Length: 183
Image (tube, rainbow, N blue to C red; front, side, top):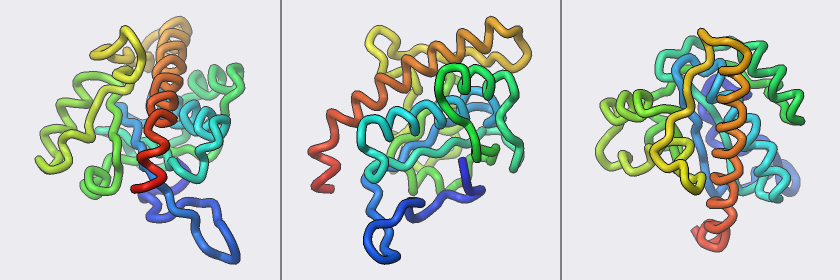
């Protein structure tokens, strides 16, 4: 996340000072917003840009128990950089009540996050909350395990799963592109 609040407009501009409309807002959520969700944000952003969808999709991250302003864990940053992704400019923030309204898709890294968010989410936005891995064939309902208290291998596993989940998510967004264009 590059901004402590949820931006109401994308950071890129079209024309003289006019913001480009963002068609879809995606929020990736974990516990403290320092390992899994910033990794998800960074990888999804990268893949969105590669797919030519940067003007159509805004990606952010938050945590169910996050503080504000903490950069991603060094172990997550090193794995991301080694994989060709950047987590630069991302810092932690807690999920806010307005996120349930402002985001189109809210992706939990594990089932506990999904349950916690469903306790706080207004009923008319409940369908936006899903698991991050639900867009990966054969991995629907799979949680990304929290690597924070683990070893390097735990971070590597989380990074691998998040990479697969991000690819599945971006493919699903690409499939939705004709719908998004007319939204």
